Image 1 (cartoon, rainbow over the protein chains, first blue to last red):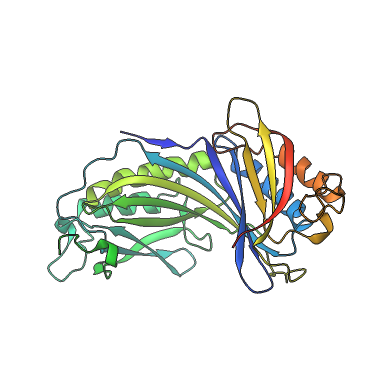
Image 2: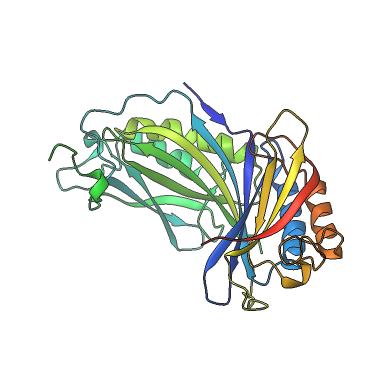
Length: 165
Length: 156
C-alpha cells in the first residue's frame, strides 16, 4: 500500500480564443524533472506556442501526481459530504482554510464545532504551522495558528445518492 | 507570472466511492521533493481524522499571464494543429495538439495544401526545437525524438 508516481508530470498550457472558448495543449515530462527546470521549459514552450496559435495563452499548470496502488477500505458510513473545516490565521493577519472530507465523529463537540484540544487536532496544527514544512496561505504568508474548526455538510450530488433508493 | 503558492491536493474516497479533496497551499519556491515530504507528513496526520481513504496526491504549480492578452485573430479554438512525434520503439508515439493554429503555418503546397502544416516554417522549426530541448515525452515517459507528421484538424 503506497502512493506511486506516474511516469510523467503533466504540463498543461491554457488558451482562450476570440469567442472566449477555452482550449489546452498537454505535454508530458519525466516525473523526476525538477519543478524549476520544468517551469523554465514551460516558459520556452509557451513562447513557441504563442507564435503558432491565434488564441491567447492565459497561463499554464504543472502537475506531479501520485496514485495509491492498493487503497485501504473506507470506514463504513463515511461520507465525503461531511466536512471538517479548518480556518487558520496567517502571519500577514489574514486567514486560510482547508477541509477534511468524512471527518470522524470522535473529534466533534456536541455543537458541531471541532475540539481544538483533541490530540489529533493539535497534531494537525503542529504539522500545518511547522516552519520547516512548506504550508502557506495563497499569498505565500506563513500559517501561524488555528482560528476556527467546525463540521459542515455539502449537498450530495445525484451520483452520490444511494443506488438502491 | 508564477503564483506564489503551489497547491497540494489529497484526494479521498468514502464508502460510497465518492471523492473529495483536501487542498493546501505551499510556497511555490519549494522543491517537489520538499512538498512531497510535507504532503506525506500531512496525510499521515489527516488519516485518523477521516473515515475516507487516500487514493491520490497531486502537487500543482500555476502560472498566469498578467495582464491577460487578447487573442491575435478569430480562429476558433477547435481548429487545431496536430503534431505527431516519434519515440524510440517499441513505445507508442505521442501527439501534441495546438488550438487555434495560425493560417500562416498551414502548407499551400499540394497534395497537403490547406491541411498539412509547413514543417519548414521558422515558427514550426522553433516549436519542434523547444519540444525536443524540453525533454517532452509520451505518457509513458519515453522522450520524443523527432517530428513525424503535422496537420490541421477541426474538433467538433
